[in-house]
Image 1: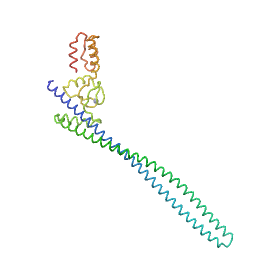
Image 2 (image 1 turned 135 degrees about the vertical axis):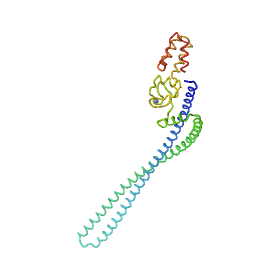
Image 3 (image 1 turned 90 degrees about the horizontal axis):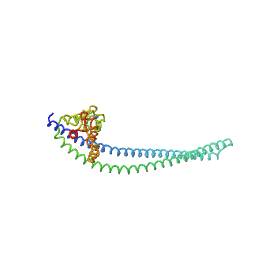
Image 4 (image 1 turned 90 degrees about the vertical axis):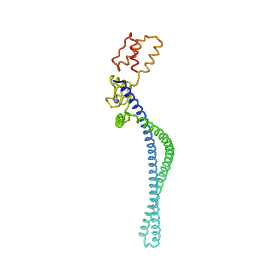
Length: 300
Ligand SMILES: [Zn+2]
């Protein structure tokens, strides 16, 4: 494989990784911009719910008021009847007629009593409804305050995100200009098919950074060499590189190396024990320090 081709693949991968990073930021902004209006919408729905409830209680109170008016009208009717009976009493001819009229009057009076009792019950209900309405009104006012502040917050975040988005879109525009068209199309297709929009990933701790399936050692070698574009055999994501998860270990080792307490050979053996899974070819012997160092440099 020519070095020209290798460096071209490496360049393409780097370019893809940068585009992915831009797109991931844009995705994040889109998500934030989508979530905030949803929060406002939830509050608006809640407020509409309280308003409906208050209106319903108002209607119920009107109904109860109408019932009271009816009962009061009925009482007036009963009183008229009683008055009429009282007048009739003046012209009775016998006791039987007199007691019949008295029974009618008593019946009318009983109806009046019942109507008064009913009115009392209805008035109690109205008081309860009015309390409910006042409570709901309070909740409504609080929610309205929340909504006002949420809207303000949303506006400022939106403006800020809008700025970020525009800047990122400009960067993106510049970035895709120099890109290989086929590669870009493949990237966009891949992104469209994935829920998190992550089309370009690193191999992290021997696993695909997108689907977390293990990436076989030989495949990792191919990824690192960058002679061709390697994709995950499980999810199809493009591997940009292998993340150096042994960097920290190496640092520890090199500190020990400086201290000089252990022989370089055994230290390198440990170092390559980690690498062996990735590069099974490499075996380091205690007496071949210089070769081992060369190998180590190549893997970086
Ligand atoms: Zn994968």
